[in-house]
Length: 116
Image (cartoon, rainbow, N blue to C red):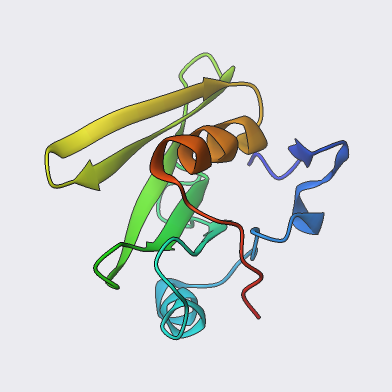
């Protein structure tokens, strides 16, 4: 598992957007009252060797979606397929999970919002 990742030289678990081992329904409960652009990252238990994390987010239309975050085969980084009106787009980043999250935030204008 990739929980050894760091976020700005802190443990991944210290990142405000990381919510650990919560299931899909729990993430939806947290995101339901939030504004579009709000997201969280959680541990994925479906195929942890290939997709150790899931990004759950509120889209522009207010709908919540979930995409698995994939570990590259050479284990040098992560990638995710994000859905849009134009189809799916693969976004990848070398390095830790934070590099991928920063890339997703920049390209899709997602905000870090504290989700309690």
